[in-house]
Amino acid sequence: MGLLSILLSALAVVCAGVGVLTTPIPKLGLVFAFGAPVLALAGIMLGGSAMSKAKKAGQTSETGRIGAILSALAFVPSVIVALTCGVCNAFFSTGNMQVQKDFHIGVTPFGTDGGTLFLPRPQRVRPSDPNAEPSAPEPDAPADPNAPADPNAPPPSQLKPGPGQPGVPAQPNSPPPQQGLPPPPLPPGPGK
Amino acid sequence: MHPILTTLEVAGVQVPIGGYGALLALALAAGAVVALHSAHRAGLELGAFIAALAAAVGSGFFGAGVLFAAVEWLTTRTLPAAPGVVFYGGAITGALGFAWLARAHGLPLAAALDALLPALPIGHAIGRLGCYLGGCCYGAAWSGPWAVTYLHPLAPAAHPSLPRHPWPLYEAAVLIALAIVFARKWELRPGHASAWYVLLYATARFALEPLRGDSVRGIGWAGQSTSQLISILLAVGASAVLAAPRLCAKQLRV
Image 1 (tube, rainbow over the protein chains, first blue to last red):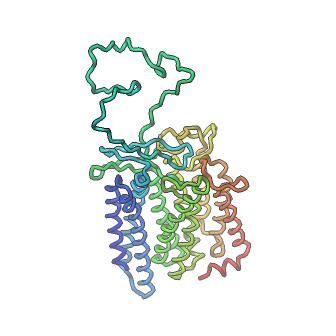
Image 2 (cartoon, chains in turn brown, yellow; image 1 turned 45 degrees about the vertical axis):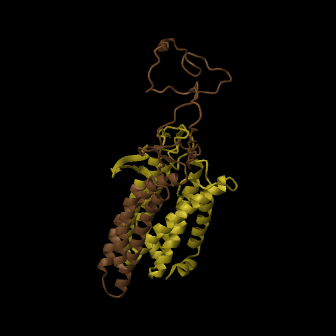
C-alpha cells in the first residue's frame, strides 16, 4: 500500500505535467488535468491507510509516510493545473473556446449572469468554390492593411466618414456600431 | 482584482496561474497542516486522520461540482459550460467521506470532526480570498464606501462592471472570527464544537446570502436561495445535536 502510494504520487506529477502540455487538446487534456489531483488524493489515502495499519500492527510504515508526503506535495500543483488548464480544456471540449495556430485563445466575454461562461461555438469556415468568380469586396469589409495602395484613391482627408464614425451623426434606424471585444478571457474557476 | 496571478511558460505552452486556483491550493495546504496539528494535539492516530482527510477532500470536490451542476440545471435547465463548485455541496459530501474513512479506520468520529474545526474556517477563508481575486461569488450592486468594481474581463463580476459588495471579504471576515473562536480548546462534549460551528456558520451564511449578486443562486423557495435552504437544514440539524447530547454521543461514538 505504501509503495502504491509513492507510485500514485509520481503518476500524479506526470499527469499534471501532461495535463499542462495537452491543455489545447479537447478531452485528452481534461482527463490528465483532472486525473492528477484524483491520483494524488488516492496516494494520500493509501499512504495514510498504510501508516494506520502499520501502527495497529505495532510497526511503522516508512513507505506509507513517504507516499503520503509525496502525494500531498503532488496534490498542490495538481489542483492548480486542474483549476487552470483543466477548466480551460473544459471550454475546448465543449466547443466554447477555440485554439488558434499560435496558441492564443480567442473567446467572447463572460455572460452577464456572472456565474457561467456562455460562449458561442466556433463557426466552421465554409470551403470556397474554386470555380466561382472572384466577387467584389464587401463595402463594409475592413481594409486590408497589407494591400497595395490605390494610386487613384483620394487622400484620407477627403474620404467621407461613414455612419458610426466621428463627424457623422448616427442614422435613427441604423444599427449601433460594433464595439471591440475585450481581451480574450480565461476562466478563473467559478465558485459559490 | 487578479484573476490571473502570473503566466508560466512550460515547454512553449503559456500556462496562466489563476488567482482562484492558487489560493484554493493554498487553502487546502494550510487547512491540512492546521488539521494535522489539531489531530496530533487531540491524540488521534495521524495515519487514519490523513486518509480520512484525503477522502473528505476528494468527496468534497465531487459533491461541490455535482451541486454546482444541479443548481445550474435547476435554474437554467442547461448544464454549466465549465466546471464549478458550491461550498455546501463540498461540505456535506466531504463530511460523509470523512466519516466513512474515519469509521473504517476506527477513529472516534466526534473527536475527529472537532479536530477539523480550526482548519475548516481557515481554509475556507483563504478560498474566499481566492474568490475575491478571481471575481466570482461576487456581491450585489452597491455604491457604498467600500464597494469594489471589477474591471478585469476575466472576472465574472466585471460583466457588467458595477460597484458591488465585496461579498467574499464579508464571508472571509466571518470565517476568520469563527477560526479565532474555535482555535480555543472549549470544554464541550465530543462533537458539540462541530455542531456549534455548523450552527454559527449556517446562521452567518443565511444572513449574508441576500448580499450576493450572482443571478444563478439556486432553485429558490419562498424567496430563498439554495444555500439559504441548506443553511436552514444544517442549523436545524446542528440544533438538534446540541439539544440532544445523549443522541449525539450515541450516534458519533465509534
